[in-house]
Image (cartoon, rainbow, N blue to C red; front, side, top):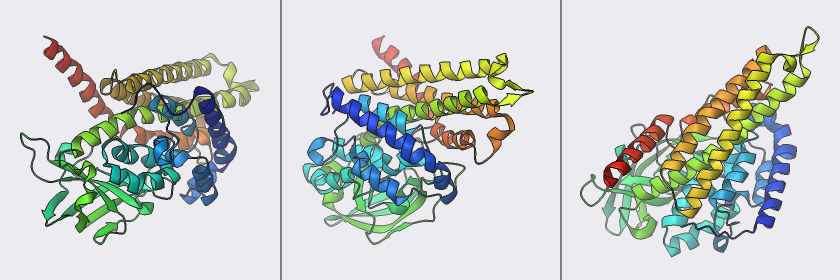
Length: 391
């Protein structure tokens, strides 16, 4: 569990943040069109990310990571959001939803086996939770895990699994029994991608986020040893998923703020230079009003993300604040991106213009790791339950 302490001093972290910002803006940003056109992160960018420790920035130092806490994580995430979201997706599951399941719930042996490879980028970990009939609510899970001697046999189908085409390890959620008084009956397993019976489908063709690969994954009588059961406990799965997703929501909110900041910066730069009838469009009050709305929303989102991350690290709020941050910031990023296209006029609809890509990229943020509707249920339901308990 994270505390207010961190492995990295403020001075060292400021250096990391400056290096990351330089990498994003001088190395990745100039190649955004190439990444979009090729639906691929170039190997040189992947290797530089490994060399900088980006595959393990949120993994504890004892396992080879940088050991950043969530308050530091969100500062990096705002930088990652400034460019194509495929960059963050490349190492996001290692640091986030997949890696954090191991960090928070794995046995010492499981951590020793996997975390150093995850932190170095030698191992790409995928979080295999979503199914055709179970998206934002894992309670509908159908993938089954059954005991067979001293092994577990997994069968089922997962959908939209990030990094599945290049994964070395799947962190797989499966039902061991129907939900009962003992718990939800959901366990989580560590399944190497080369295990017999694991097949990965074709890369999904998505609206945006080119270069961030997702695919279906099928588990057909996949046999894993008892040691593959995370935490050695059949009932850890649901709690591990909920904890990992809640932490990830703060990170996604920060990513949205970074993307919105980029859309704002593109809008201001365009408005200052593009002319209508010989006058820069930024001189028109209605254009200034759109920019003012963008700026205000970005500032509000940034403040909310930092506050939610602080509350997570201190342990003060790990349920309502993450959902509130994700809800507001991902919706905000959609509105700011929409205004950016409007400021650009017809050119904002063209494929080679950054705001067109941002508009498509940020649409997914309102869907994954819990839709906006799910966040509203968590926030509203959580507050009502708290009041009922208090009463």
